[in-house]
Length: 279
Image 1 (cartoon, rainbow, N blue to C red):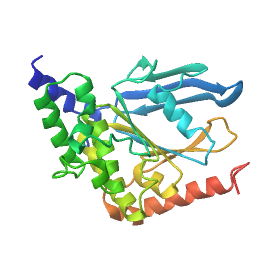
Image 2: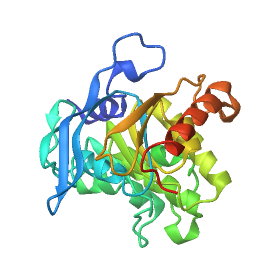
Image 3: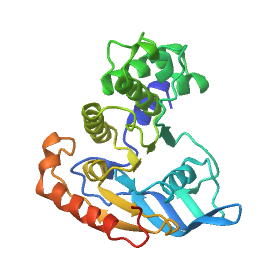
Image 4: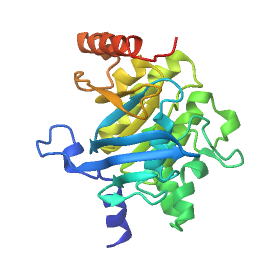
């Protein structure tokens, strides 16, 4: 396949069913089948099973210590299950891979590299031509709202802009799944809400699947097409909530929609009345 065709294919959503308006059944991207994980013989997750379809955003919500980040790290390939099997795109997860990109809370940018070079880092590691690196970096910068800042360094950016740069770097690799571990926890409320809207806009453009870890009910309801409410002491067992907000999902008024308020209340009550909840 010529380079131009390869690049075009890499930029398309992985599954037609992820495109709004498509009526085909979405393909399964992730599956956990009775997954368990233990630290020093102490179980953290046990018999955890679920599946995620292409184009979904699943919010992993719950208190510290409930297993959210452990689950995310298994999908990323940073941890290997002690039991069961975890699949991504119908293949067992044996370690990190280019089909899964991780957006960290701490930005994880290279301070000595420009925005452009940070975004293009995965392409540089893959040995792609410099012209391609620059082209993809500029397109990803524009996608996340950083057009005009390609030659800036991380220290010249605000916290929200740094997180946009980290997001663009993940998108440049063309993953089918984005894994986000409280990526907006370090920014102010207004910036956080703007970035939430940007994530949904970018997802609608790329068709990627997202697993998003958060402690915030509002964030989970606004972003998630489904919410997995995980509670401490349940070894990863979760209560599931579907969220059906109007399209386009990124519109800020969805935070005032009756569905948002209804789901938020149900999740809040489930958290408050759960056995063994934190006080």
